[in-house]
Length: 487
Image 1 (cartoon, rainbow, N blue to C red):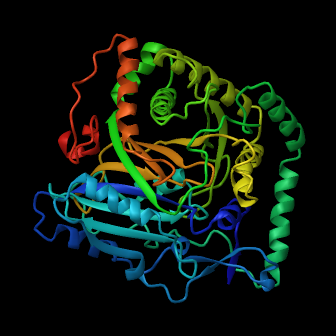
Image 2: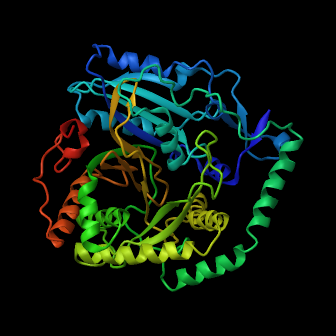
């Protein structure tokens, strides 16, 4: 029995190569409960193996053949091995955050095996302060960041005394495969019906496309960008990854937003704008024209059916000018706020499926140009992707272990060597910077630049920032990388 892959999943599967793995990831830090013994990591690992039955989503592996009409389908793995997917690792001494991020960088650069379900989880012990880390990765064809966040929230508890919790991949009573199995002969027909249904529902797509292209030609925010300036980050990448992470108090970003009449997401983009301006200046590659970021926008629940246990992707996007050509932090923030507001207004005139379709068209050049080896000739459609995924607001626990930090990992591609993704959690916002180890050198310096830009925004608003500190691992300004210091 098999289930046809939707168009977005198919695109991610087709775009994947050894140098461009198409999985997203997450690094979660847990503090064991007070009564935990020296084998806390082993206990947590064994709890993640505790699944009598696996949810259908986590049994799926991709397949295509002449019998499927050349279309990708999802098959259930009859030889599923939980101990292959859930692994136990340890850090070398001295067990700093530095060693943890280095391990996550190596794990994130390795492709998921397609003959197995496309996910892994690694329980990592050896941090000097006793915390336990869990690094997970799942193919973007299965889940987007918002769906993954909902799934995580669904399995953690707000009760620190709750025990015996099921892992994310364990089947629940209500779990079911979101689509019935089909014979090989029915799969091509089902794919055609799916495409026809999308076309019928998006009858207004041509006019929406025309409006979007007009906005792009006028330099206004839209789902499609007709070009961005080239930077050193917009070049061919290697398979090796580097991951840098840090978090900040959400109240600091909120205070800047209140003082300037902007949103937290605007402040996030402004922090990235100033950090990239400094980083590219240091590396001799700051263009005179503003950088353009693709900013994913999650669709509201109910607009498109994407329950977390069913997987899938339900996001649109806006191409935002980051105002890296403006000299001051406040000017950049206000310009970004106007750009985002205009982009959201444009999306408001479209249906959810039109948003998804046009956002897919906007992303297509970033995939097609490298595939045709034209990324060194044609200008990049945009310079990088910056995502902000909302997370839980209250502290959460896994079998009594408190979740004290969340940091997302994402997907660099040819022509776009850097991806910045943020996640909010319990009063903080964690930045995850994922880049090509060669094309985006000294990536960890961006953490310092992000902190400097937030301080510049606070200074412009007359807000006194906290004193700078140094985190475990010696990264300047990265105190929030170590959540144990704030709990």
